[in-house]
Image (cartoon, rainbow, N blue to C red; front, side, top):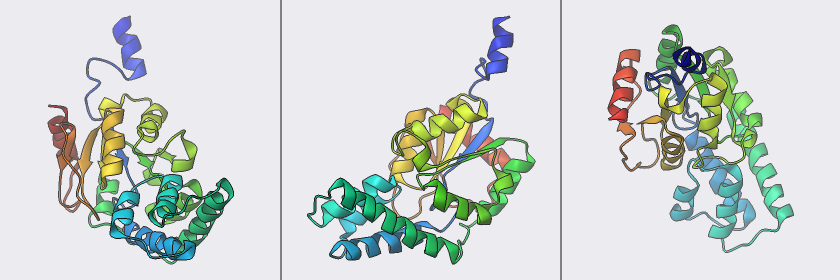
Length: 237
């Protein structure tokens, strides 16, 4: 009986078998990290001055509220709650205009998404980007690729907190150990790692440190489902 219950809950002795792929969006599936680079630097100018490289690196892959706060901090400013909210609204509006102009795919990403879908594995989009911008991006990505989407404004805390990945696994009815997360940034990799997922790291704008759960690949081009299964096993060792 216990084996039957475990099977239904998806937490059997084979909980580590790959059942789903959890995809980051910006810099992983789409070349939108470059657009965020434009947006963050424009926000800094809007707030009073150019953004330093140190501040920009600190904002890559981060949740919106923290990235905006770090932009203020990099300029030596301490925002009031109203100023923080106004800056977030400004950035969302600016990014919506950039997203609407078109979102290029990362090399190999479209084919990889299709291959995973065809193989019958679960898929979820897990992003720190808010729902407003995510819905714009999904017009490019294709909603049918994903069983679920988890956005940064729909969880108690964004990446590097594990909450987004824990929520995605919960929605899929899976243990995080059954999921392979695909990420491009230190922030995202830390979130997936902390959630208990194996993490395939394909770096975009910055380097990502290693860890026992992280496996690395330079591109998504040529990536097959067999590769994903093998990488998932490698990350479990």
